[in-house]
Length: 75
Image (cartoon, rainbow, N blue to C red; front, top):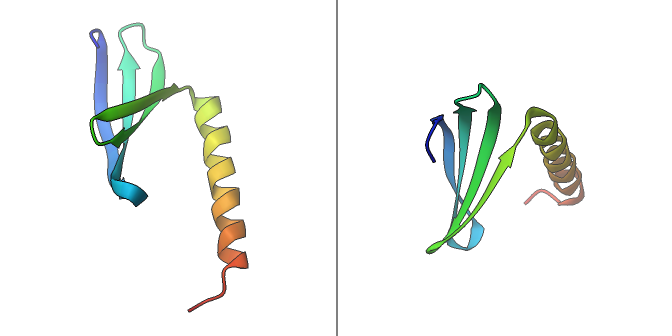
């Protein structure tokens, strides 16, 4: 995509051979987005999130992971 500056924040592997990347994207207009890309083989799913949506999404992920961690017995 033209007119944007992309800075890689993270890249990591997820279950079932998926790869997740998080990129900081600054558009030519100055608009800032978090780009979440999920790669499954040759298929890509891309979400561009504004700060409020990223915060809401992150809170939901954290709440879920903390709840599951509490419910899962230690090995």
